[in-house]
Length: 406
Ligand SMILES: CC(=O)SCCNC(=O)CCNC(=O)[C@H](O)C(C)(C)COP(=O)(O)OP(=O)(O)OC[C@H]1O[C@@H](n2cnc3c(N)ncnc32)[C@H](O)[C@@H]1OP(=O)(O)O
Image (tube, rainbow, N blue to C red; front, side, top):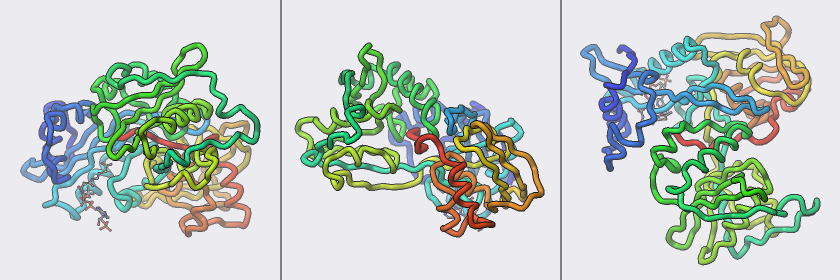
């Protein structure tokens, strides 16, 4: 089995091999080799696994994204995608060979982290990826959608802006601009390449299906948030994504959507599990949480670089003993945080925590706490205060969340 790079000339064969791996036929021209689904592929970053006679039996790709880290730091991130192995060649180590090749190649390009969305949660842990952002569906019946009075005063919910309803097809540039401002401030968010918007792409899977967009503007008329939605049968309003980092704007958009006539319930398809909307409703049981699950998986390729890249919010020192079984590496790192910046150097001091690189990936964006993984039996705390100290260090300024599908 050989792993080889692909070029633009391989696009049709690449898409065809991927379709076969997923057992699907392209249903529309858009899903074929030259269609919008695949127009964003960076064929100089993709790989084929080929047999001795040159036949491709496996595919893997990578997009060039920017990932927002805690502290609003923008970091380059390889977005691993298009993973597939032909059904006839599975469980023979093809994916393992492609993953090893890809990780080596990403490091050679100087990248220090990669991310992916997993089709199955049991595949990628062995390759060092850990679930790092989480998302849930929040369903609110309209008859229970009254908002509580904010007990801390009128700051949240007192909206002085306006909401306008547009069609997605007529406001692509506006959405791109608002999304770009949002993703720069939201830990866990990914950049969306211009060609993704230019292709008329909407929500997952990349789709030009019609959508209404409620655009929120501030008092000066500047767009500062949007919610993209559609009304389907039976009278359910489904919100693909609500884009803003301003809680008052989110509240204004939620009030607008929940006030829509001829709607029995509103389904917010992707909100962070800790989102305050449930707390804002007068009836706490009105917000029904479903589809709670993982979204973005993170893999650290260079632990010291990754740890020094993100922002930190508590001063402290932590010694981490990090095992990377897939790449056969182990390192002990002294992490020192002062005034929001971290230093990370090799050390032979006794560790506070011992952990697998996949678990460090899960902690990296602050989406879960070290003490959760200690209690789960995956991270070893070497003394009683270690987990609490790590909890304080790893937290982010807000819950990480990713809305990009790739
Ligand atoms: C980021 C994305 O693109 S997600 C999309 C992933 N692709 C798909 O789901 C398409 C359908 N599935 C496939 O194409 C293949 O089954 C793949 C790509 C998931 C796995 O490819 P394979 O070549 O069979 O994997 P490989 O032989 O290297 O397996 C390595 C190990 O992972 C395990 N493994 C592989 N796939 C799975 C799975 N779906 N569930 C659980 N374990 C798995 C294997 O058992 C093996 O374990 P071992 O090391 O203990 O023996």
